[in-house]
Amino acid sequence: MAEPTDLAADLAADLAANDTIFGRILRGEIPCDPVHADERCLAFRDVAPQAPVHILVIPRRRLMTLAEAQAGDAELLGHLLLVAAQVAREQGLTAFRTVINSGADAGQTVFHLHVHVIGGRPLAWPPG
Ligand code: AMP
Image (cartoon, rainbow, N blue to C red):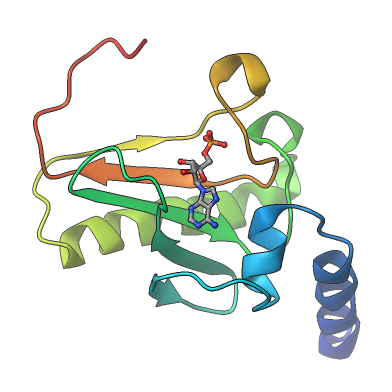
């Protein structure tokens, strides 16, 4: 098992190599409006909200897409969903939608995995 210092070094190297807009947010190079932060993830308000509440939950360690996730990412993915539900609860949402767009044809524009938490208005189904 890796020493904690190795894990911290790995995460720092991962963050330094993250050339997405979310990497810049994680490095503090551009601002965000945070609603939750812990050692594994950050949640902040979407800059172009599609509903009264629109929050993004992102892992600190970069996964480009859900499609590239491996068995070893299970705990992190579970954590992101638990944080999504916690954030929705804290925002007063009793109903909300979580979305993970995986791949450009599915609407993914930022290639650092993120969970959208959307709510505060009726949401139609199916999505476009
Ligand atoms: P997706 O299309 O699923 O990749 O979602 C990317 C989301 O990131 C979109 O909803 C954008 O509005 C949002 N976004 C892009 N840049 C920023 C930013 N600087 N701060 C907050 N949200 C952003």
